Structure formats: structure tokens, C-alpha cells
Image 1 (cartoon, helix red, strand yellow):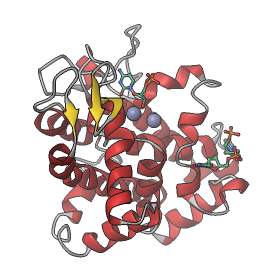
Image 2 (cartoon, helix red, strand yellow):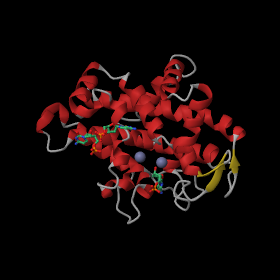
Image 3 (cartoon, protein in one colour):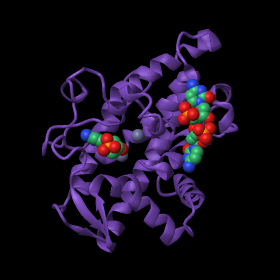
Length: 264
Ligand code: DCM
Ligand code: DCM
Ligand code: DCM
Ligand code: ZN
Ligand code: ZN
């Protein structure tokens, strides 16, 4: 996701934290965040160039046209190093943060960075094209037009659909989008929230579920009907914006659930 996607997910999440998780987040956030998780959720993208090792941790490449995800098969970087993908990163930073309960500021890890990475990667794993095909780099090599503008398909899903929705419905405001999603959590999504929060077993984060849903949505929605040079406009926008909203709300609800399990 771009800035507004990550901002929305973290704003939704912070409002759902238990007392214990809210206190821990408050203590771990950098001064510059002023207590606001959403303001620093884009941090992991900004430091990709300084922490070069981290750039492979934002996504998973899955086999072309297969539309499935398997950790053992797919979670590796381009050099084939196992665990170096967004699912592996979520597991890693989750386990680092579990040391907070016993170690607090004496942990061997930088738990501020762990919190910022986890909050960002819980967002990215919900972006369908961050679990896209290998051959097109999650849609990055698919050139399209977004209305009249040249874009690539990945960027359309990171940013353009969200920004177009903000312009059309919320007076160009990300806060407006977040408020609408919040309202819908108590309405059209009310009976699904509990299911989203659940993990299959005794896991803290269920990356298998999040990533499998993403590649399924990539195939059923993002890639569907697309070819090189396609023009995407009103019809694509209006049919895909519900999918984007769903992935944003699931990302936010699940980030909160994971933080609540870590610090609870
Ligand atoms: N930050 C921090 N401690 C860390 C990582 C980040 O205080 N371990 C803060 C400093 C900045 C913001 O996050 O306000 C972005 O960091 P950077 O300057 O590295 O982009
Ligand atoms: N920040 C952000 N989006 C912006 C501007 C800032 O998420 N458009 C966040 C990221 C930084 C924090 O605010 O970690 C403060 O950044 P810094 O202290 O590096 O200026
Ligand atoms: N990305 C992805 N899958 C890849 C490569 C990149 O999902 N195989 C993501 C990471 C960034 C965006 O696409 O969000 C652009 O990546 P880059 O800046 O590496 O081109
Ligand atoms: Zn992206
Ligand atoms: Zn990212």
C-alpha cells in the first residue's frame, strides 16, 4: 500500500487495542509519532534504501497463474533465502515483540522498530498484489492507464483506487475514508469481524490465511480481465473498490488482534 492505505490500517487498528496493548504501543512508539501509530506506519517504506535487506520483506512472489500460496514453497527472496518474505517478517517481528512482556526496554531487540515493521507488514500482506505472481513482480511490470494516466497495475492497487475513492466520496480526505470504514465495521461487516480476528490454531499471526486470501483476491479481482496496456476506469474502479475496502478493514482488525495477543 501507499501512504493512505497504511495510515488507514494503522488508524483502524489503534482504535481496537486492549488497554495492555495500547499501553505497550504508547511506550514503544517513537517520540515523533506523538502517540499516533498511523503517523509512522509508512516508516518501513522510507527506510528501504538505508536498510536494504528489508526491501524483500514487503511482499511474497507466488507461482505464475497458480493463485495459491504456500509458506515452504513461496516465502523466500530472489536469492532463494528462506523466510525472507512478508509472512516470514511478520513471524519474526511478532516473536521479537513477545519479549516485551518479560524484558520491556531490556530486550535484545529494538522493539520500536519491531512494532513499526510489524504494523507496516500486516498492511502489506493484505494488499492482494503484494502476494501476486513472480513473472510480473506483483503487477509492477504490467503497464496500464488509470483513467487517462500511465500507471502500473501494482501502483493502481497500492494507491490509485484508494485516492480516487477519497476524491469521489470523502472530499479527498483519508480521515473521511477511515471514518466510513469504521462505521461499516458496526454494520455490513459486523458479523465477520470475529472470524477475521481468529487464528487457525494457537498462532499469534495467521499469515497463511492472510496471504492465501490476498493471492485469491489478486486472481479474482486485481488481475481479472487485465492485459498489458488496458485502460482501467469507472468500471474497474467501482467493481474493485469494495475489495480494497475489505482488505483495508481486515488488515486493521487483524493488526489490532495480533497486537492484543502479543501484549495481552
Ligand atoms: N524511529 C525511532 N526509533 C527507531 C526507528 C524509528 O525513533 N528505532 C523514528 C524516528 C523518526 C521516524 O521513526 O521520527 C522515522 O525514522 P527515520 O528517521 O529512520 O525514517
Ligand atoms: N510520516 C508519514 N507520512 C508522511 C509524513 C510523515 O507516515 N507523509 C511519518 C513517518 C515518520 C514520522 O511521520 O516516521 C516522522 O518522520 P520524520 O521524523 O522522519 O520526519
Ligand atoms: N513489490 C511486490 N512484488 C515484487 C516486487 C515489488 O509486491 N516482486 C512491491 C514493493 C513495492 C512496489 O511493489 O510496494 C514497488 O516495488 P519496487 O520499488 O521494488 O519496484
Ligand atoms: Zn506495493
Ligand atoms: Zn511496504
